[in-house]
Length: 185
Image (tube, rainbow, N blue to C red; front, side, top):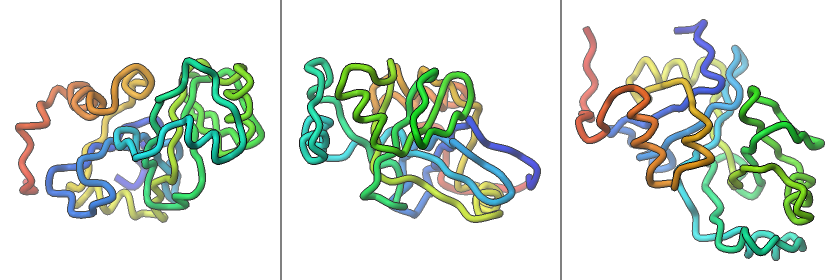
């Protein structure tokens, strides 16, 4: 388990997840190394839309994006924006996860969106999920999470409530059939 790299994977919170920050969540892992892991929850909308967020930071929002939602990305740095988006655009603080997904934390991505020159597909989250070295591996051993290789269409093309079941389908599992009891062979 120590050598598994979960970059570009989904973490599916098991039904027994007791942490309210992650219960019922689907988290996209943007970076995983021996130093720890960084991910963004992609299925938990918050009571804030892009129009309000852009107004708060002094930017205008193109007409077609009014009403788009903002997500709870995780419990770390919840006052900071994390934008998952499609390449090829990069900004001053962009982590290119792969050829289909990038993560940007700098305001210039939102400025580009405001000017109609932003990424083709994106979601905006406040906060991120972070794990220290070995922490995620320990949680996986405790059956807190299932993992599956990510499909960017789940992030960018599905409604938030459809994302967790779609990720489960990638594993060939019906979420309703999962038990909150862990078992070990």
